[in-house]
Length: 80
Image 1 (cartoon, rainbow, N blue to C red):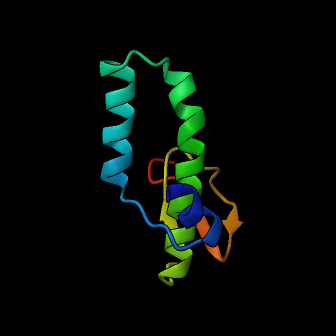
Image 2 (tube, helix red, strand yellow; image 1 turned 90 degrees about the vertical axis):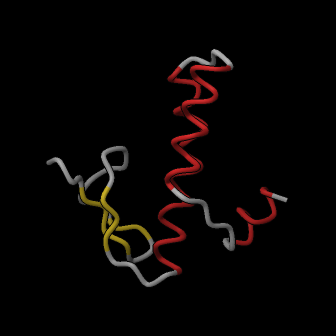
């Protein structure tokens, strides 16, 4: 089901869910942080896709590459 949503570009996921996923897999399940980050790259892409489909023009993120524009959405680092 999740793969179908990702492939069709219709899936949306909140940042809170991503944070809970990261905490659960790293603290509870003992997954190495770098391994969890590789999985989150997919979820980062969903954030950009959700922003684009919602008409957003900017996504603020510490994790994505600032200055890039993807699907019409500019990535900016809120701390930089």
